[in-house]
Every structure is written in C-alpha cells, then in structure tokens.
Length: 196
Image (cartoon, rainbow, N blue to C red):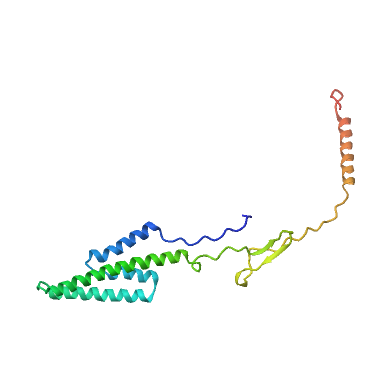
C-alpha cells in the first residue's frame, strides 16, 4: 500500500495451445477440402490482421475456389483431357498450398510483431510526482503529456512545534494529590491493618 507503484503488466497474448490448435484447424481446411476452402484461413488472417492485402487475397481465393467448384460441377462425369486434369489438379494444389503457407507465415509474424512491438505494449515505468534526491530535497518529476498525477501530494512540510507548558508543575501537583490521598487512606484504615 505504501510502497512504490508497480509497473503495468504487458497485455497477455492468446494461449499458445489454443492458438496452435486454431492454426492446425485452419491449415487443414484447404487440404481436406481439396482446395475449395482455401479462402477460410485467409479470412481468419484478414480478420486478425485487418490489412487490405489480406482481404484482397481472401476474396481472390474465394473466387478461385468457387470457379473450381463450378467447373467441377459443370463437367460432371465427362472425361477431360490430360491437359485439363493437369491444370485442374495444379490449380487446386497451388491454391491449397499457397493459402496455407501464406496464412501460417503471416499469422506467426503478426503475433510475433504484436508481442515484441514497443508501441503496442505499455509505456515504460516512470515514477511521477515528487521524488527525493540524495540530499533529501524534493525534486518534481514531470508526468508524461503534462498531465498532473492525482496520486502524488506536496512534499511534507516540517512540523510546527507548539510550545509545551513546563512539565514540572504538573508533576508536583500529581505528587501532592497522591500524598493527600495516602494520608486520607491512613486515617481511615482500621487499627489492626498493616500500615506502610
């Protein structure tokens, strides 16, 4: 309560176990869906980073996945040429692997940058208000942004000594009262008691 204030703690990042589980889930979606859900990890990345490039890449991946799905639905059971099969499988592979790679690299960099960037973290600890120098004199330390610190007070002023009445007359008065009380008790004591 009376010690120096504690420095503010940096904001905590998401639990590493939960973050890893999300990364595994979003990396598996494009691979398990044969590239049709390649936009899902890019959507998560765009929401987390809020960058325009990530939103554009998410839109492009969605359009490419929808185009592949529409082509697969339109051709149905038809036998395609070897070139068509090669282009189709190559597009699916590039779309799935590219989205997963970009998602993992960009998200890991984003959280790493956020964890270590000084502008995102708390300001460095600086004591505010009055501090005392080596010679005991008070020194005012300016607060950031020129705002006054409501938790500091003015340096203590030396206490004003009020004159005390001399102690000797009071002691003499108490002694006199005790002697008087002692005499009164001796007079009222029965004859057979031990007197001191």
